[in-house]
Each structure stands twice: as structure tokens, then as C-alpha cells.
Image (cartoon, rainbow, N blue to C red):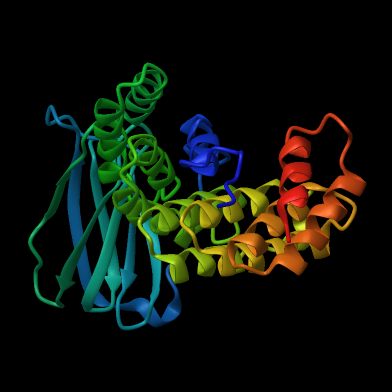
Length: 315
């Protein structure tokens, strides 16, 4: 029985989750958006006023209040006064999506219906945003191996800022490092929704899907990798090794075919494709790949002894 020398319990997964998720976070900086002028089609006879306060009841000045008319998908913004009061005059009646934001506070979103009659005051209380502190704490916990605690901190930030989809990646890392691949996949998919071409996310998602024996799903992630952007064969080889360990040599061969086509001068893919062929009882193909590996790899390559041993036993 042929056996592969490289341990793959999750060789690919282990390598990927060793990366710190710190870089996954962070919001884009830059200047605050300019006040949006009210489109002509939103002008009418209605009026909406309100007050924005902090968690101690103090008015929040210069908070941005954005109103988007649902039926028109267009909106405008007004700014609160120093005492937190704001007013939107001469607007069209209807349902509005309202967003209230101010530096160092968590964004609030809600829906209101505005009529031409007198409308109730829209009073909103903002909560202080401690996300930067939570992210720092989460990263420290992650580095210390306290994965459950780190995950709790990441989730607090994601709850406060659902727009920060990259935090899903950090949460997935904590699950992946615990070997909880089904849970990791949920957050990897969420992270990929915001960044579908992220190579690291696609690798980790494919590895996690392989570990839960969802091989079509794993191949789906790998198919999304643009091989022309790869600088070496390692991402594809690692994915193939995981398939080999699961006795799914056909998938491994498909992935390694791409690696060989992209990097015909590199030896690694030939070795593992040769092994996958042998695993599939395709000895002639396996022999050809192993011979190619021996011709390309340096004499001290880690797989060289096993490659020569396998070649000596192929009948």
C-alpha cells in the first residue's frame, strides 16, 4: 500500500490559520463624506425633526443624519446642531431608511414613515463605539490561544458594525484553529461575500470543506482561484494533499493538473500527482509523474527518498 510521507492532517489548514487575523479588520480612513443635497424628486410638504443624544443623554452635535426614500432609492443628509437637534424640512411623505452616524459612536439604522401631518420626534440615542479596544483585545486573546474569548470580542464588533465583513474572516480563523470547520465555513462564506477573490479565504474555505467531506464544495472554492495570479504551486499542492489524505485522488489530480500547467518547471505537483495516480491504481501515469519529479527536484528534496522508493516498487 502506497502512503504519502507528508502529514496532512490539515497541513494546509494549519498553515493558513497560523496567520494572525489582525489584518482582516479595519475600516477605510479618509475625509468624512460631504453633506448630500436633497434631490428634487424628494421635495414635498412633509417635515421630520428629532434629537440625537449619547448614552448619558447629552446632545451629539455634528452627527450626520441620512434619509433615503425607499420608493425612490434616493436620499439626502442633514447635520445635528450642537444640542443634537436636527430637522428635515419640505420633504416628500413616505417610508424612509434613516442612518445616524457620528465619530466614536456606533451607527444606528432604522425605518420611519413620514406623513404630511405632524410627525413624532425622531429621538435616537447613540452608543459609544469601543470597537478599536475590542479588536485589540481580541487580537491579544487570539495570539494567547484563547480562541473562544477572542471570538466573543470579534463578534461584539461585528454586531456593532455589520458592514465590517472582514471580521468574519477573523472569526473563521478562531473556529478553524479549533478544528471546527463547519462553523468556520459559515463565516468564511460571509467574508468571501465581501471579498470573493481573496486567495487566503478561498484556500481556507476549500481546506475546511474538505475536512467536513464536502468535496464538491471544496472544488467550488478552488475553481474560483485565478491560477494566473499565483506565484508558486503551494496553494494548489496543499489543497491536493488534503484530498489525497481523504482518499479523493480524482479531485487531487484535477487540482494538480492546474498546478502542473501553471508551473511546469516546479517539481512538487508532479510528486503529489504521481502519488494520487498510484492511489487511483494508475501506475503508468504515477510512474511518469514520479520520474518527472526526480528529474526536476534537487537531490536533497524531502520527497526524493520516497519518490525513488515508490518507483522501485511500481510494477
